[in-house]
Amino acid sequence: MTNFNIAPRQAHFNRITLETTISAAINLDGGPIKLSLEPGFFRHMLDSLAVYAGWGLELTVVGDSQVDHHHTVEDTGLVLGETICESLGDFSWHQRFGQSLVPMDEALAEVALDVSRRPYLNFIGSWPQPMAGDFDLCLIEEFWRALTQKAGWTLHITLKHGRNSHHLAEAMFKAVGLAARQALAPRHGGPFSTKGLL
Image 1 (tube, rainbow, N blue to C red):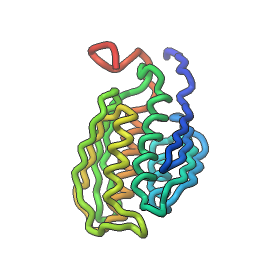
Image 2 (cartoon, rainbow, N blue to C red):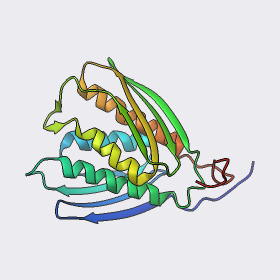
Image 3 (tube, rainbow, N blue to C red):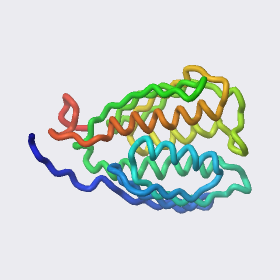
Image 4 (cartoon, one colour):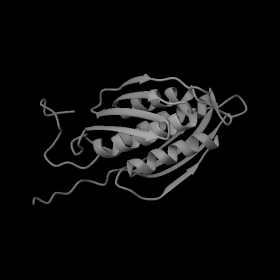
């Protein structure tokens, strides 16, 4: 077996605007998960994402919740995407592709992921209930769109069926986490591409 060393796959990123103040630190190979943000449902989803992806993630977000949660959710996606991208360095040491199919009770979510610096989101699904607590579920698509743009992910999400919006959302975040665990797993041999470059 060939031994090889990969630079620490971790990064830290801060973003301060008139709408949000966000600090994020990620370790793709594990570590503590410490999340400080509202709304609680969104925090729960991000915790599921990090657990199933196998990340260490520290995230602190303060947003203009007196307006609504849109800026908080979208900017969190931007910062998390930027941090993931930075942690991959020159994109030479990861498996690149991942896919998963995750059930949660009656709900089923399917995800395919290509981590290749080609940002694109294809999101297919609808929410039987528009809210989960005080969280507007339409913001989830905005989160993934922001993350894919900054992380360089091609991400396809399909909510195949389900009657409970909470179950659908949780199945989705777990499915993305599992696909990311595969796609971001360490790999030896340079970029996984016929071009020789990602």
